[in-house]
Image 1 (cartoon, rainbow, N blue to C red):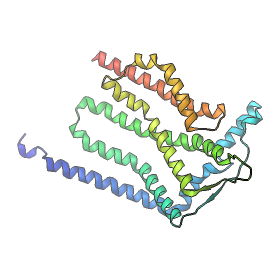
Image 2 (image 1 turned 60 degrees about the horizontal axis):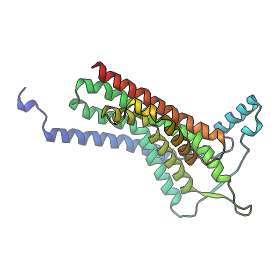
Image 3 (image 1 turned 135 degrees about the horizontal axis):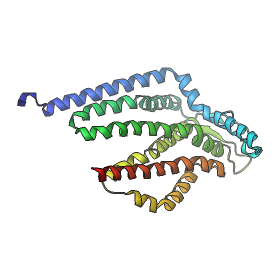
Image 4 (image 1 turned 180 degrees about the vertical axis):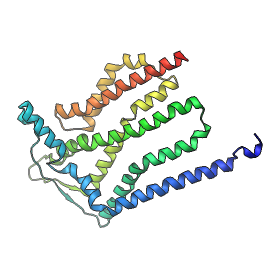
Length: 266
């Protein structure tokens, strides 16, 4: 192959620029779409703050089936306020900005993968594809779990908590949206534990025996972490948060063991 056929540094730089531009265009389109759909966007964001949220209704049905009345959450009403002149517009921009990024993230990851693909060996391409797909899926699952379970119960507990009857809770708009977005990000990143374990195993940093040996310690850390994320004080909510993270840990053990087996087979 002649030297003229080999892509130069500037060719790669030009391709990277094209990838970035395409990704930004898709992100911008998602941002504009969400910004224009203000009512739909904030209906979705504020639905977990209602006492008739789907998770509460399912929990009440479960309480009827188990004949455990205390399991059904009581109705509550929390009002929201805005005390800053530009806060509502800024929050609208932030929600559309980050929501657009979440929607556009599969396309952005696909574009980056296409850029890196020529530099990968065939054996690397075989595991990079499922790893990228798994990382996107796990992140979205973490965000969904936070939206359906973790954030609603955390908001209900903190929003209705009172140190004195004369102190009424009125949640500011930036506080609510900021908590929802930050907790969604935290849970999305926590769900990347199996992907992180896979790469650490490939680098030889961790082994399956190590993860099994420290399983009890990991369970304790998971319970403490779940208690920090969801300070609701009840065992049921603590279990709802702890069990998925524990399952992610067990999935990590299985992934690391498979990685070790593949290395031995080679």
